[in-house]
Amino acid sequence: MIKTDGTIILRTNSFSVQWQKRVIAVCCILVFGIIALSLLHIGRGTLNFTPSQIMESLFGTSDNPTADRVIWRIRLPRLVTAIFVGASLGMAGSVFQSISRNALGSPDIIGFTTGAATGAIIQIILFNAGPLETSLAAVLSGIGAAILVFVLSLKKGSTGGYRLILTGIGVGAILSGINTVLLVVGDLDQAASAQLWLAGSLNTRTWAHAVPAVLGFVLIVPLMIFYTRRMNFLEMGDDAARQLGIATEKTRLMMVIAAVGLTAIATAAAGPIAFIALAAPQLVRRLTRSSDVPVISGALMGAVLLLGADLLSQNSPLNLKMPVGLTTGLLGGIYLLWLLGRERRI
Image (cartoon, rainbow, N blue to C red):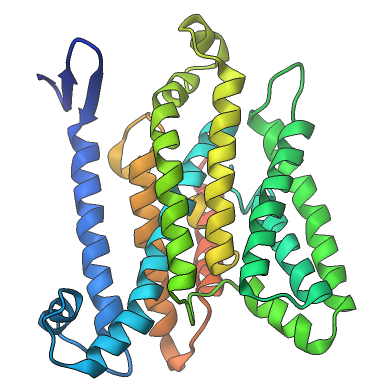
């Protein structure tokens, strides 16, 4: 083990791992934040539970069947869905911003989330499909939109930068128009159901929503971690990365596929949740002051932001029970205006 100013390096004969002390400290704080927000999530509501009651229920030592039923069937599935949807969006946003080299490079800005919504709306409006079919359609259409944006943004065998963002905005605008037409074509009940899904919500989440979100995240994270070091080299520019032996376009393609998969799974689980993917990487970069792609720290920040937004949605003034997607949209819009006013170059 080698220690330098602010950095810890673990080195063996075959590999080396580097940790920055500030990054570790920020990640630990975010983990504690997730735990604290989770206790508030489970403990607050029509029925309030103390931390000791929550722990007893989670570890199976509770003698309160009402608490067990509320925690395990209602609040815990919602909590798990929120954590992994937020983590997926935060991690995906980190990748998109690195690839596009722009603070606006997030799936909801460049059209991938809109693409996932198109498939879901088609299923709801045209086929009156159930939750499973709607989720599957959202995943497939999100991946399809991502492939379309990636192909259209290719120029001389390379992608990324402003071209990727502008292409995504254009494709997203077209898909948004298609979504509006579909909502007009559908009958009132179907349109209301589609609008409810489009609002993005964690209400009525069950283990059927939570388990796919967890599995998708767990399966994709190893691929993300494997390519993160190569993405860090891409931050120096394509020419420098190629000189170090990095296959730039293959790395981008693999990371885009992984990020789109995370976005589609998150959208399928909770509907379109705006601005988490945009804000989480930016906030965590400011806290860690690291030039590396904030894959893990971005995921933790995304989970904290979504948990906080959901708590705010449930405890908003005037007792308004807003879908969390509307809350993140309102807060994200304020953040975006602040970001545009603060940054000279976006």
